[in-house]
Image 1 (tube, rainbow, N blue to C red):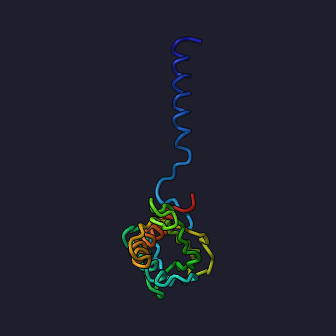
Image 2 (image 1 turned 90 degrees about the horizontal axis):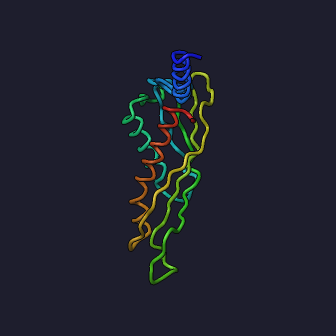
Length: 173
């Protein structure tokens, strides 16, 4: 094989290897189930836990995140194409660290919030998404557990909202 033919062969192999890395790349909207620009109604998320105030916080955070993201439009019941609902299934506290001189007193908690999210196409009633989404944050326990959890709730809700909107906009990779 001549020098020129071998250099073309090497160039072809290099380009083939480089192009194989782009095989799974998607251009544009990644979720074929819910196209960009669809209008979404956010239904009330039911709270199946004993922790009060979760439903309002999660609903508000999801609405803010949909508005901030801009992929979809918020709509009311009359003119929506997709209905987003959910059931808050788990609110769990787990100790992460303890006080140095008192190993029975917890200093930091890991708080976890899990929600069963469902997305229905309004016209056909077809279930587009049915998935559990979980968010976590760490809470430093001060003098009062209730006030520490109140401060953590917006963080939990915001992370859950970001994960939910990312699932809707990008699909389940």
